[in-house]
Length: 229
Image 1 (tube, one colour):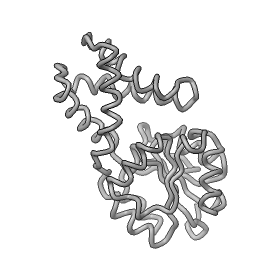
Image 2 (tube, one colour; image 1 turned 135 degrees about the vertical axis):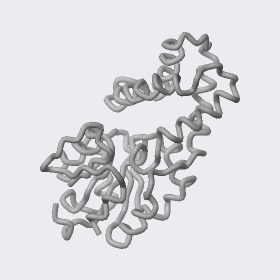
Image 3 (cartoon, rainbow, N blue to C red; image 1 turned 180 degrees about the vertical axis):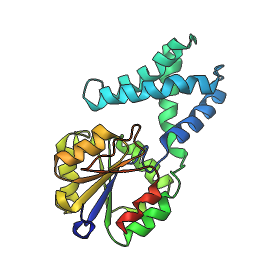
């Protein structure tokens, strides 16, 4: 990519700027105390994290609705760990988790510093598959709102990444052409492939498996975005 032609940077939120796993673990730690859940938190998270990823993939593909996602990602873990959680308790914890999760605001190292540096050179935007109320709470609580010109969420658009429509909507909202924009995110499928399909450039953050691609950039730390300065 030729950075002289780039006018805007589009960021994913969860797992890219906002440290989802760290904040989620902190939220569950609080909930385990509140609801007196007698499970080892580390053992719970070992099952929960991949399950959550799996169910979010189904949700992203339109194979699962929001309420089923919130319930099943907990139900399957309690079942796997043979913990006797009633449906009523699971529903209560699911709702409480959504309420308190945005209260935690750990960002990836260097996030604000890099956003501050980049904002002097580019328009900054967010595209997220999260639920609008939750994502806006996270952004506000983490002090990220001042950095971004627009925030596009899947619940408002009615399409989730990698659907081309959400990227085109975000580009139109930012008044920028695809070749003038870079998408920065952790998901190869949702962020990178989705963005490149509509003609955007892409930076893959913290790839699970490094591929050393020729058509997009891989980084492991946000400070590596300094190549755009």
